[in-house]
Length: 234
Image (cartoon, rainbow, N blue to C red; front, side, top):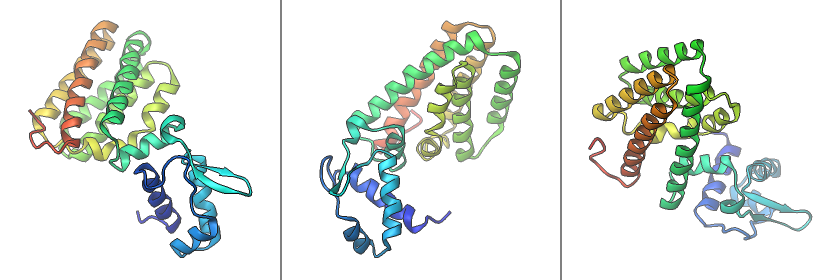
């Protein structure tokens, strides 16, 4: 879907801020200057500024100026999602993201083994069956995200599910790159089946062990993809 003019300007300014072109604490051009720069009306720029402020990119000092927020120390999930979507995670940020994801999902899968109902397990099994016959890497990526989202929901804590869901759209372009590799996808499917079996048997330790193996494998592949590695299946 084609982006609107407002969306395009928002994206350009976000990238300028995340790249450091506009540093934290630095003043942005005035509203009039931004309107002139992008050759748009003030109403468009007003909408842009509202979006950037809402999502933690800027701070408005009333009647004075607009400055870039300290997004690295005071940011939110929206900014993290944008970093992933725009391919702008640095090594440290990537490590932080993977570490946080591991912490979240190991807790979720352990709780899933305690709390999952037969009905929920049935839906999880159905999802895995659909995964097994899928050939399209893009659809494979979405199935994988649905699996991890389902695990978070099975934990019984709705907030865990919200956190995982926040990354769905931005994570697909990243992970679909390696789901064209048959060996990678075979490993993922095997671990999904092992995790589902452990949850069904209410074996939290086993479920956690299998999830750890899955996530550590994914970390290795993602790092290779972001570093431009070619042998992503090894």
